[in-house]
Image (spheres, rainbow, N blue to C red):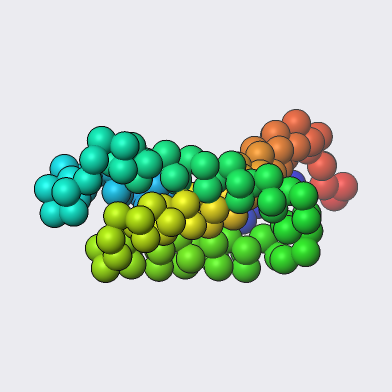
Length: 146
């Protein structure tokens, strides 16, 4: 049975993880937010602007398939894989303004691949958290024998 302090700690950890995931997943949409400025600054065509967005989705699919083919979450511990993936996504996103449109599309692809190392693992972690809550809720109470 989970004690009250353990339950509070578990919720605190979940809040920290969720905040971090929202921050990391913001890299997914960041280029879309600055797209009007990039179109003007880099004189992007409609096709190039679309690929700035599509490259993330394609990179995510490639990264997720690649990670599952080599069982990456089984080879590298979850927290290390998530951390490395989050840092890679942040670095790829930070480098975006320094390259031209072609390089930026490649960086957006890399961002998507990196996010494949974050999002699926957090979904799995959430399922484990929920399973533990259900298990604790339905576990019979132990009575003291005094």
